[in-house]
Length: 423
Image (cartoon, rainbow, N blue to C red; front, side):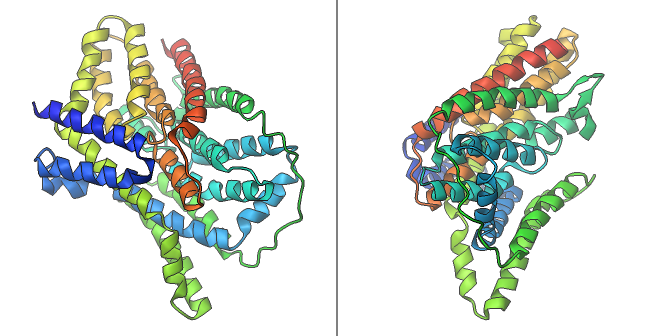
């Protein structure tokens, strides 16, 4: 009975999240509170169910991005980009590909926070809506998270469970690894994106180059990227390492700005630049997903795979990929992947097959599936939050127009390549 109650609350929560985009943070927090009040989520587990590393990283990077934007460096990058691409369509594709490359080595959310300001600057100069541009950056960032061991939390979970190292994502057992699978998926998705943006043929003309007077925020931004990459190779580190890096670098920039201006005005100015609504939304979602896991909902879903697909490798593989796509479009893929990894391992043992086909299928579906909806991945939520702060109201339909075809192109490509490589 408890499981059905939890499932009902969960479904209602996501219906409200999709239908009330301006109140998502309050819906998520209210839902989390309901799970605690009715006793499904123990009070003593609420704090630990929230991924503080993610929240700290988002808050710190938002602060660094605020300094970065104020320095006018995004405007300069926009000027440089507009000098080498023929039209807006190729400018969007270039930003999408660039964010994907960065996101293969740096957290998806951090990538969106770093690249989106450039997109906003280009859109402002060209007097076009930045909504499709930022959405393209977000989905591309999320896609490439599965490319390397350090690209996303789900990749880290798989690497730890399967005993895979960094290079195994490039070549594994003499075959192409997930990195190349993701690149083929990205290529297919980029082709789709090209045709979706065919109307954006406005010529891009250089309007001169913006003068940047303070390069320290750029140093902080580059330092964030470098330190996050270096931290990913540390064998043992605190769970909040990435968050500490981002917050520490933001505080360095803030203190420098306070000293430079000689008053406390920058403190309130930069605190306002942090998207507290997005942070509250993610905190609420962490508790909600942990609650349905406590109630056994995720475990029950996992058991369905064993019953339905027993004895047929192709059917099991297909179910794992596409059910993962659908579920990851609405629930956080981290607890889902953590739950499914031992299930996938058990299935492979029972069927006497290598588990890597199912492992890679799980990673493909769970990571890429997050692009199906605006709340399916933290990168998407962050991108929409950036647009909201810039004064743009993003409807669910705005996201779905890009997210659905982009996701289908990438997942279908990855689904086929993984099967032919590892079946």
